[in-house]
Length: 175
Image 1 (tube, rainbow, N blue to C red):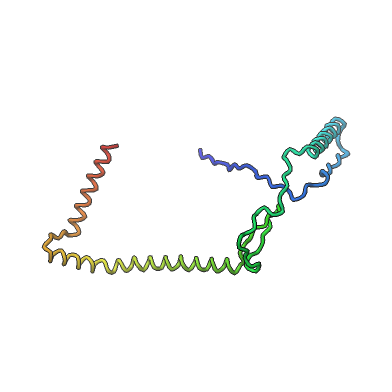
Image 2: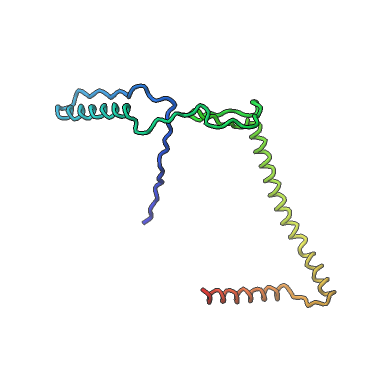
């Protein structure tokens, strides 16, 4: 039976910029509850209030002061017109981000370079298809002029097939 793996991740704690001044108010109990249910609800609310007071008195996680500027100043300051500051929500971190014109120029350049590479690759493949027969004729004539034995395409393919079979058998024996 097929099974699916459920994703699992650890939650990331992001501290608030300012802690809340007072705990949230608890909702009022409905008037239609029976006496035992009302007592249970009141006990539960009392326990929640105590837990909130303890959490305010002793924070479980130590309070870490976030510096006003966590990133060091750059050695060479860029002109303020070329960089936009982006503030990370929940913190006072400022991240420099290039302006839209710079990003669009970089994206356009990358798209053009990738397109040119793909076009050159397809043109080169086509050029090889067209010129390969001519190269083979020239190589065959040079070999014939030098007095070397010419092997036909079918004989060459048969020889390579035989070599592949021998190599495959040797690999099977070695495994």
